[in-house]
Length: 137
Image 1 (cartoon, one colour):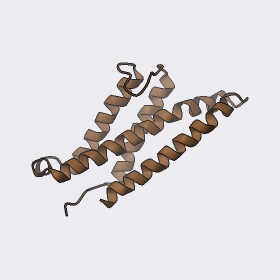
Image 2: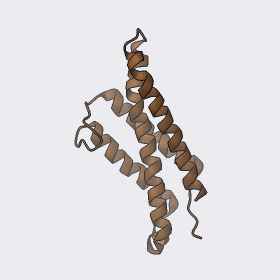
Image 3: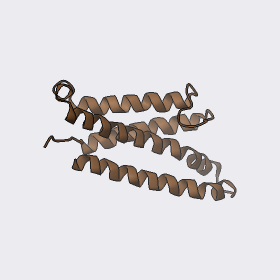
Image 4: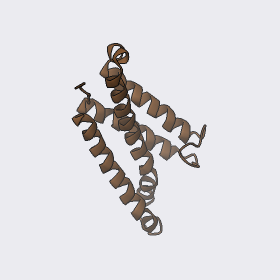
């Protein structure tokens, strides 16, 4: 369970950063800050969404795997990482392409799509670095 708590701590840090950037966004957008900085500030939520999506689905799928003996025997932990990232990517990318509006009413923006993909890849790299597992007690 320590690995799941580690993922939760990373998610909490991401959510704090998300909130901080949301808080400063209006003042920066109204300022004379460079356009590149404004683009980054507007697209950061998509980056954070990608990371949190991968970490959340990884934790959920690992938990389900630990509670179900048949699934545990059939699905490797590394496959869980890939499945979680793929499902997160499907959700996030289809949302950005306006195929659905489950996460809110989005406006298509290439920068948002790019930041989402980078966030998904970052989430996957975090998972590969941590290699979370749930041991059955």
